[in-house]
Image (tube, rainbow, N blue to C red; front, side, top):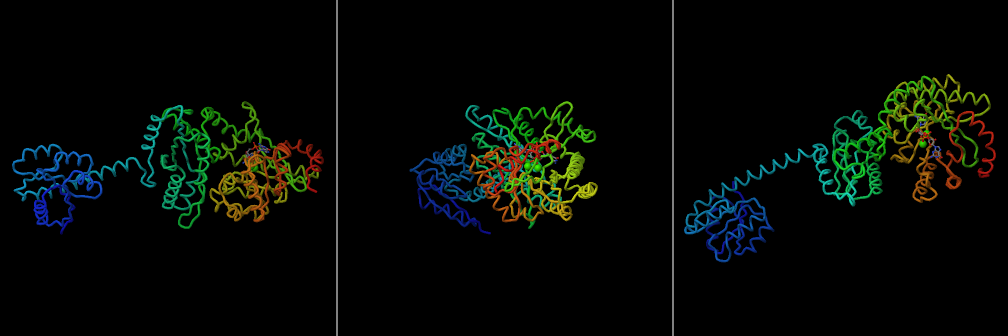
Length: 573
Ligand code: C2E
Ligand code: CA
Ligand code: CA
């Protein structure tokens, strides 16, 4: 079999060149060649084309073969460089070999040329194979095979390099750790192969959501790390939001749609640590806090560390609290924007702890959700809410009762039976009860959520989507779920008077929801200006401190007795 050989010849004699090439062709090579006779031309040829071999005549007058070797050495090319010398130059040819030439051949004895070329080409090939193997090994040692992202080892190395290079005064470095909340669900329903595809899609989304100079790594399992360099804290937060938005957009795997939800912890250099270890540890502490919130991102704060002791204590005490009726319920009214009539109340649980005092539900509900306590807690809330409803009915007060449901409650196989039994026990109409489920948890496994919700809506119980707007879900997708009401998250309303962007989002949400036949509740209305704006935007219902804070049952009755004045001032007609 003939082999093509691309030869660069440094030779000032045309005749000698022909002799050399003939010799090579005799050996069966198909030779393509270029003859040059200056170093400048040689350099240009080496830079512009690919060569298999350089042959240099030693005794030319227009250049020095030793200089040629130096230039060749600087190119870093690994191809044979063979010197062709006259008999009397043999000593110099040896010197050339010491300078890096692979071999020399005497001009008058060209029979040695062919075996020398063959041997050197073979060795070059072996060296190239070793190099490729080395590169592969190095790549594998520092990359994750599935996603091709840098692995933990490379990430730590990059973080170390970044810290060493960073100037503490001027450079912002942020470390983000990201974990998936519901990947196990994906693996269980879609299978492991599809789970792998999902992770690959996720990896490329992460890569695409940051700059080329940022590092995205797979730390292990479903934990990813992102190293962002040179942007201030404020921009880091919008970058984090953008990353989470990208991650939480639906994935299409083998015609199945899947939504992932993620938690993220963020630590800043140098504020939260100046070593690799502390930065990673602190980002991880923040990540655990984000997981307790069931998603979103959390910045590291020094008090997060100490919380874990209290956290363990709280979880075990929560059981006691439920058993001993240490919990109480607050009720916060929802009123109609048009008529300002009272529509119903949202039931909010309160815990007055003997040692810590008032513990916020934002603190203990996530803990309850991590354990089975949430099942008992929700049943306790439902039972007491319905009991309260019956008492009010007896006094002639008829209010819809909203109760917050955790996704863990919904997925519990016995949940719907227990809820239906309570409704029977207290003899209330099922449509009195409205269950609020947050948007993000609902979308973590929409198909399963849909089935479970249907079991309850069939019996007349209604669902609302809580904290709408904080996760990613398209309204058209939500339309397939049996929900009638969206509660726009209070974060959109907090600043709506000043922030035009929020106002645009809320207006679009209201219009779209109405087109889909859904009603909108605005929660967190704190002042008249916000009330007026939402009334103009044709929002359906209001909830917030401006109307009333959450109240104990007896205080709510007193509040209702004095409500007429507010109603007259706020009703549209
Ligand atoms: P959520 O369901 O979004 O409840 C609304 C929260 O907003 C309540 O906080 C309420 O007090 C507060 N809020 C109402 N109006 C305003 C306002 O005008 N301004 C501001 N800044 N806040 C307002 P709360 O009671 O601390 O509850 C926090 C979260 O804890 C709730 O958020 C809900 O996710 C959870 N939660 C509360 N009770 C229960 C429960 O019984 N079961 C479950 N699963 N979760 C509960
Ligand atoms: Ca709620
Ligand atoms: Ca809410």
